[in-house]
Image 1 (tube, rainbow, N blue to C red):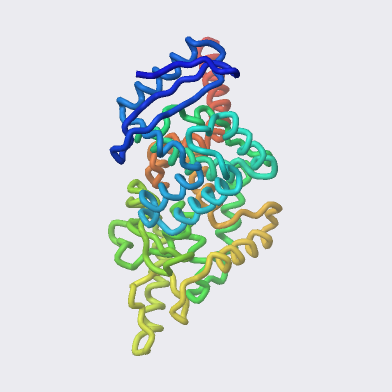
Image 2: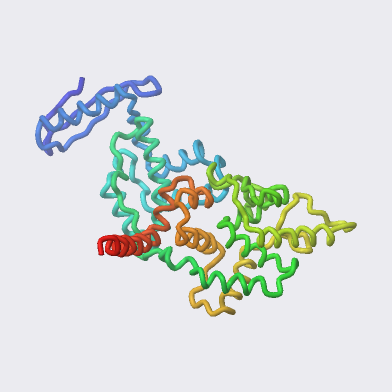
Length: 377
């Protein structure tokens, strides 16, 4: 039972409880304007204690809890890139929430710190910092360490707007010019060109293309199976796909398959009888048995875009947006496009390409109006 006392600066409650270590302790809080407010606050604490609320854990500084949460629950569970992203978020917390206990972290403090950071950052950067702090705090709520969510309805919008997705892809005509430029004079030693053309044809991610092995390509069924990626940043070896849905089977056109056949034939003939062997059966290796770097592919891509007069060149990931945009403009079902891209949810596809769908809706509205007008004329 809580005790309520009148102090010089207001009303105060004191709650006795048995901590997780089996020792009896007290929780005291004051400066309440009325006795009733102190009673209500004490009752809320007592209720939470019966539900497993851990007061001692709530006295931890937020950055300390955040790092412990990472070490126990997340470190090494996914990719090294994911670990690096969480480390950045932890360093942000250590720099901005030092001395602030979990129990004292509220929405106002959290939003103020995020706002200051966001002034000179893009929304995507702010969101990535926020998402991992929120994940740790959600676990603290679930475990009964805290009972209010300081991240509730917090905005993670940056002060610098992200580059619009409409600027990240090429039009159909630009893509046609680009493919013609890449095909002109192509030969198996120009491996970057083959990678770019496959990116245009399939919408695959760079790491997915880099991790392709020859057994993933079915020339008879005309498909490419995405079942792994190549971690070119940390492991320099095969890695998992981004998510379960990223493991997929993609249909490929005859022309692109013929290009891959050329590449396979060259590898078989070039490496025959040589010491160097394609031990991992990788598709995209140069004659020195080396994978093509991301910068090398982007350099080739930029060169050919400049050649055909594209003012705002895209990078390799922009080929993925280009592939999807062309399909959507051609009226391909959005659910199919989403599966082809390996998105986890169709809402992801919808969010990225909403502006294209809006444009198509305007055109379709005009078609409906024209059709109905002709029908009743």
